[in-house]
Length: 85
Length: 124
Image (tube, rainbow over all chains, first blue to last red):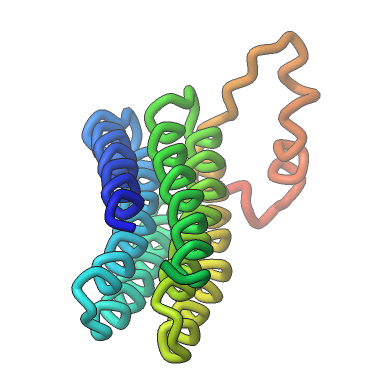
């Protein structure tokens, strides 16, 4: 069971590294926001998995609130890029 | 090792593979619309599978209910944000990367935007 969790964390770390490279390198503002959205979703998944490992049930609530804040941030930046804010 | 842990481990493996593919697609794709597609759809499936796997692996009612809440929230919020972002970048002036001859035929959304009088002043 531990090997599955090690594998999951290794794959999620690789995904975070690729998305962070795009977040740093991205030519336009939209690319950075897409990379930020992906990083938020991967972080929510990592927080839920950490909650199962540490047996702390409160981390699941932290993941839910983080997902809500990331969603609102992406919507606000999209409205700003559109020119309607 | 119980049956709950086996099913949860399989779901966690599938979810982490799809999360990795989402990050790789963000890095590899040539265009912002392709990046949106790779980074949103694969990541949505991966996060839903991984959170359901964690909920099943723990096996109690509160974990399963809480993971269902997060799954439903991700299933609603992630397509909305990607749709808003794609619309904003299109209205800002980015056009899709088309590796073909008939560029006008494949960009079918352009007619809708250019015939909409309310959206014309926004377009850069």
